[in-house]
Structures are given as structure tokens and as C-alpha cells.
Image 1 (tube, helix red, strand yellow):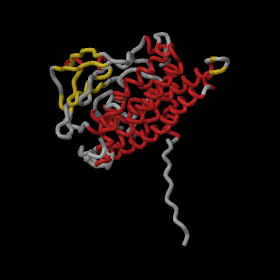
Image 2 (tube, helix red, strand yellow):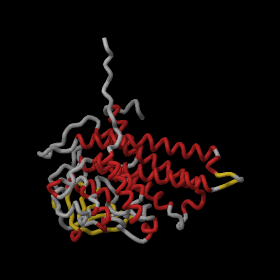
Image 3 (cartoon, rainbow, N blue to C red):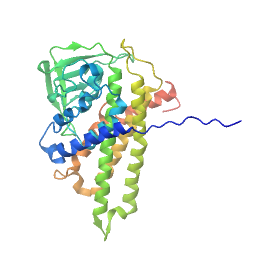
Length: 344
């Protein structure tokens, strides 16, 4: 009998998805250079809006493109690679899930920030027109959320490592309840943040490799030393491992989006896939940051070197929407089926 081969599956990004990412990279290269991070809060925001970036996930009936999260992943990675300031994930990803009918959302004219459940603060809330504040979940159930206008919000700056991603504590005098489930939006935000972390890690690796090739010690480039080569190779392996997990998580999130009746579809292991992506991407970015610091030596953390912006972004995004330890605990619980006696 002739053998039957299993059908092959191609998880590579499509030419259209890569072309979109290339367009975003070109815009950010021109309008969000490292020098802009020192003086501007929203560099390239209007330019990205002009190419449709903030309308990627917005429904067509609200002037958006109606694409899926996986379509936007390479473009989101580019925003991390450029260390783009502003509430990018919250406006481009969370808002289309929770506020799809808000006018001018697709144009980027309305900026959105989010206080996640248990979150320390809202990123770039002082730049936002609307702030989504998540209510604490109870007994594993979605606690819902409210949306707060800029005029009703009271902001208190919070300390943080990232000067281009400022956190604020949010209190408010009035708010409007949201009638859409919060969990799918938070999962999408977590995956989008993981994609940004992949971009940060790739940029840190590129900069470290370039410096290792040019910096000479004992008459040879430091990149020729095994200790340096192995450390940078470990970063490359970590990024190569994390990126497909982010891709898979985006597919799982899209499969679990609410239907027209706002009922969340049951997709096995979507939470596990999201946690695996965020944990792996955060750890890859953290490893890239530590390798960059060690490769550059004492100049790596100085004010004069632009590297510090990407170091800070790696640390701040690693903690956003749950750190690696929190997500690994969720993975352990999912794999153990709730019985953690064998997994202390």
C-alpha cells in the first residue's frame, strides 16, 4: 500500500505580513531614531497612523483593516526593535478588542492606556485620551473593566526603569463600564508585548555583535573570545526559541476571540500558550540585556550611550502583563492540572 504522508504546515509569515513590517521599520528608522528618545514622547506616532498601523486590528466598519493579531506580529516586533515610546500595545491591540467603535481609533488620534488587573500602573497614561482600568478578577472569573476619560482621571507618577514608558497610578471620579470581556484583550496585549520583547532582544543582539566585532582587546576583537561568542550565541538561541512561541500564542488568541454575541470561545491551552510566549520572550530579552551590558562593559549603562534605552525597555516590558515567574507558574499549573504536589 502506498504510504500516506502527513500534510505539511507552514508557520512562516506571509509576504504581506513581512511587507507591513518592512514599512513600519522604514517609518521608525526615519522618524524614531535613538536621538528622538531623548527629547520626544511620541516620535513617529503620526507617521505610523498614516500607514494604517493603529487600524490594523480595528474592524473595517470603524475605518480599520480588520486584520488578525498574527498579521500584526512582525510590525509589533519592529516597534520593540525601535524602542518606540507611547502606549503602542494598548492603542493598537487592546483598544480594538475593547473599544472597537470609538471614533478616530484607527487614525491614532485617540490614544489608550490600560491598568491591568493587579498592575502597578498605566503606561503613558498622561498621553492617553482614554484609560481602561481592569477590575480585580474573583475566583478566576473576569472582573471586567471600566473606561475613564482624560478629564476624569487623576494621575500620580510611579517610579520605573524606563524613561520612555512612564507609569502612573490612576484614580478617577467617574467612569463607564465596558460590556466586552476583558480576558481576550489582556491575552492579546500579553502576546503583543512578547512580540515587542522579541524586537528588543534582536536589537540588543545586533548592537552587541557589532560592538564585539569592533572592540579590540589584547590585539584581537573581543568577539573572537569564546566567552563572548558563547554568551551572544545563547541570546540568539533564546530568541530563536521564543519567537515561534509568540507566533503560536497569537494564533491561539485569535482562535479564542469572542463571537458576535461576545461569548468567549473555549480554546484548549490558550492561556498556557500565552504564558509560554511571554515567559520565553521576557527571558530572551533579559538575557540579551545582560549580554549587552557585559559585552559593552562599564559604558553600557552610561547616560551617553543609547543602549540604555533598550536595556530599560527590556526590563519594563518583561514585567508588563506578568513577569516570567508569574507566567511560568501558570504554565506549571496548566501542565499539572491544578495538582502541584509533584512540582514544588
